[in-house]
Amino acid sequence: MGRQIAISSEAREYITDEIERRGLVEVGDIAVLVEKHYQFDPLKAREREIKAWARRLLGSLKAQDGTREVLAVKGSPGLFAHLGTCHDSKIVDAIIKQLTEKRNGLDVTLKMAERRKAEIEGQQSLFEATNG
Image 1 (tube, rainbow, N blue to C red):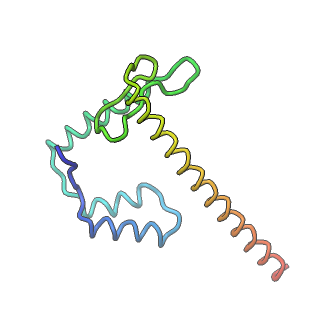
Image 2 (cartoon, helix red, strand yellow):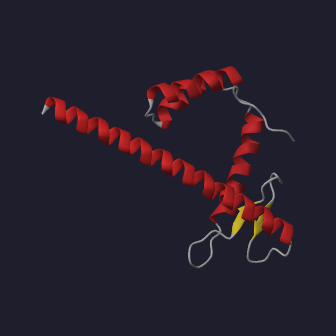
């Protein structure tokens, strides 16, 4: 089954523009915007909720040291592998690739946050110097 779309691409674009415009948002505020455009289907909602619970259960399985043992397999929707018992090296390779990409993406986001913090602190220092 393909991915169901609950809001139009135009509504999604409007909401993402609002997030960017505001800079700092609360989930409740965005939920209000989503609600205006959300197309509710109770049968699909039930199915999504059941699958969400299943994914949460899979994601909550952890080793003694607290690390996740069960991970989604990139490129195989709905497929999860238990790293302690999976015997398929291609699946483990896919998980390694996925984790590496996530780590690299987090590194990029971390650098972006550090740059933004430096910009903010520089603006505050400049403001304090001119108004001090």
